[in-house]
Length: 244
Image (cartoon, rainbow, N blue to C red; front, side, top):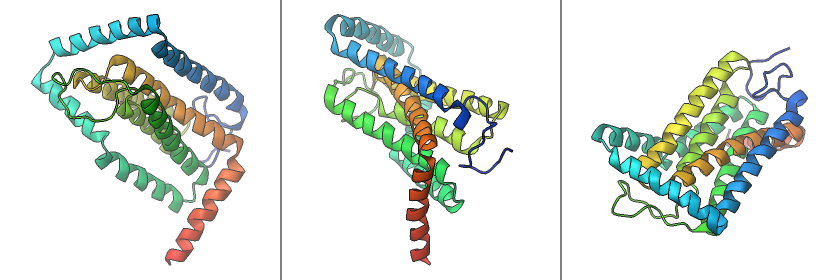
C-alpha cells in the first residue's frame, strides 16, 4: 500500500526515492557521487589538474563579465537573496516544525540530515582550502568567507531536492519536481558566477555536495529508521508536552 503521509516509507515508491527495496541501489549512487567529490577535491589539490581547472574557471568568469546585463544581474541578486539566511533559516525551521507536528519523523530525519551534512561538509572544505574569490573589483556582491566550495550552491541543491523528498508523492510528479529542483539549483549556481563571487569549480562541487547530502541522509535514515525516528519522536514529543 502507498501512503501520502510524509515520512512514512512506501515500498512501491519509484526509483528516485524508492525505499527499503532500493536502498542498495541508492548506496551505489551515493558512492558514485562522493567519488566524484573526492576526484574533484584531489584535482583541486594537485598542481597540473588545478591549473587546468583554474584555466576553465578564468574562461567562465570572462564569459560572465562579457555578457553582463542589468536584467540578469537583478535576477542573480534575487536568486542570491533566496539562498540567504533571511530566507533559508525560516524555511528550515518552518519545515522542521511542520514535519514534527505531523509526527513525520523519518522525513524530518532526512530534512535535518541533509542540512547537517551539507553545512558540515561546507565548513570543513572552506577551512581546508581557503581559496580566494574572484578579483574583488569584479565582484557584484560583498563576501567575506573563502570561495571553495559555494555555500549557496550546496544549500540550493540540498534544500530543493530534500523538499521534493519531503513533499512530493512517488511517481511521475516526483520526477517533474526533481526537474524543477535541478533547474533552481543550477540557476543558483550560475548566478553565483554571474555575480562574480565564485568560480565555476566552486559551484560545480557545491551542487554535487548538495545532492549527495540528501542522498546520504535518505540512505542513513532508511538504514536506521527506527532509531532515528524514535529519537526524534522522543525529543520533539517531549518538547511538545512540556510546552503545553
